Image (cartoon, rainbow, N blue to C red; front, top):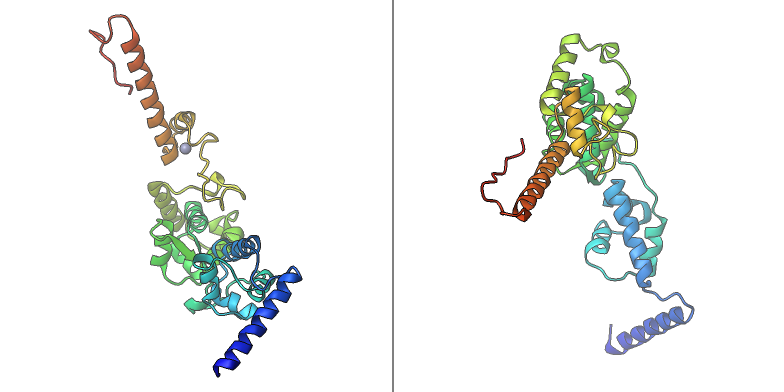
Length: 271
Ligand SMILES: [Zn+2]
């Protein structure tokens, strides 16, 4: 391209942009539209687990585009915006090809379902066979929280199995009483929450805690654990420690404030 041609090309582009701006649809989107498109990608990728490959395939942009929008760009061309807003959720392809397994979604919902299945008496070998997630060790790492995320395909398979089996007696699918007891003991040892600790809203909520007592995460919850002989959950233990610290501080300050101060006034530790 000669310098004259370049100049003519730039003038044509400038003219096009000017016309687009005058019509109220500039070629680069407004900041609020950019944020809208960014939120759409973040939702589809991080919450629904749609892979960037699937997005690119569906509306015809490069697989690097979502990453650029999420982490680097400040604006985008209107055609990119229109494509992003046309995206619809597409579940991962059921395959062993890692590129097709969907995006990486948070671990917790899958971990909770897996732990509840174990607590119900389903062992991991059975879950691995039923879900096609062949590596039993991989499932064990998910149950023990050794990963930060799972592929959305794995999350969907385990979620489907959970829905199918959680109200079914493991005996009815052919597991032996010994196998069932072994899984249940494992769940007790590891403190896995059974399905009764969750409901449909909380099991997917990353900030939720398993509800063993109806008051978990409070000192009252700790007392209910003790009364009902349920091993105390972590939030209840933390709440009890915080409660004790507060009590101790309150006794300390009242002892200091009393006439005569703390002399001869030993503070008893709260047990
Ligand atoms: Zn608790």
